[in-house]
Each structure stands twice: as C-alpha cells, then as structure tokens.
Image (cartoon, rainbow over all chains, first blue to last red; front, side, top):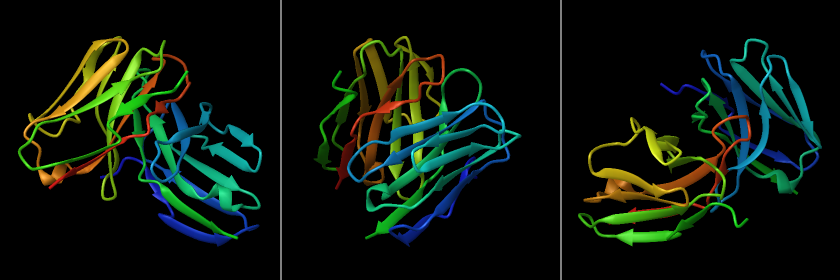
Amino acid sequence: TQLLEQSPQFLSIQEGENLTVYCNSSSVFSSLQWYRQEPGEGPVLLVTVVTGGEVKKLKRLTFQFGDARKDSSLHITAAQPGDTGLYLCAGERGSQGNLIFGKGTKLSVKP
Amino acid sequence: DAGVIQSPRHEVTEMGQEVTLRCKPISGHNSLFWYRQTMMRGLELLIYFNNNVPIDDSGMPEDRFSAKMPNASFSTLKIQPSEPRDSAVYFCASSFSTGNYGYTFGSGTRLTVV
C-alpha cells in the first residue's frame, strides 16, 4: 500500500494550459514537500509546506497543504515546456526528517 | 558547494559480483539518506544516518545490502552478491536534521545487474 497517492500518474498538455496534480494520504504529516525530477537527475526541492491550509506561490506554481495536513495540491498556470518533468510529493512524519515519497506525476508540456 | 556527489554514475555488473556505490554529502548537512528508484515502486528509502549513525535501516531489502558512514563526508552502499532485481537508480541525499530545509539529492547511480 502506497502511503502517498499521487494523481494523475501521467499528464500531457499543450503549452499555455493550466493543470493541477494531487497528493493524498490517510496519514497526517508534519510537513509536505514537492520536488521536480528531470531525466537522469535527482529530485530538486520546489517547496515545503508546514501549516494546515497553507498556500505558497512560486511564480506560476501554487502549492496548497490540506487543512488536516493529509493532502496537498500543485497548480501550474500557463504551463511551459520547461515545466516538463516528474513531480514528486514527500511527507515527513515526526521530527527525524525521514521523508516518504509518492510515485509522482509525469508531466509533459508540448510546445 | 558542488552539491551531493555520487559515483559512479553508471554501473553494469554481472550477477553475483559485489557493487559499491559512493556518496559525498553537502558539507554541514548531518543527515544522509540512501534511496532506490524504480518505475514500479518509485523512490524507496533504504537507510538513513544522523550524525554518521544509522537510524533506520528497515528499508534495506535483505542482508545482501549494507551501508556505512565512516565520517561526515562519505558514505557507501554495498550490495553483495548483486542480483538482476537490484537493477535500479540509487540516490543519495543529504539535509540538516532539523528544520524544513528539504533534501538535496545527488544525480544518482544507475545500476544494471546482468
């Protein structure tokens, strides 16, 4: 059983479209992080959300942490080909810094 | 800082051989993590260290896998004997153990066991 479920698994869209990807769990997390991974490289941290209901914006990316700290969403406005990659959410339980990763959403943005 | 450095980038070995993967974390980070990534299972935590001490190795698949961190700037993950099902990309990551700073990942080692 996957602790963190991400949806959709795959997403292929045209440049300029908006999209939302989701990260859901039945467990409560002390924080949740989003990473983007490009082929042949390791994941790169985009954002950390800590407070239930928190919303963070990073240019065209908007991240939200659910009120109950069990789920999160990533919304991209006016997607660009440079947004292409694997988007991973990761939840932290407790204070040890041990992250559990979802399987990711593979996004392809076509010009 | 050059980031987390892993070597080798690619490794092809025959079944039964010993494989050693290496990692140099970011200077000052006191937590180090070894992950394995496959299409089927995604990123799985194998083991992590705090201040060079192994904290949780419950993700290590079996006794064929072992990891060491002899000092704050170096860690190894060893597989002996290797098997085809060990083929995957192995990532090392480091972080501060407190605060929400996130992990910094290396570029990974792609292991193929034939």
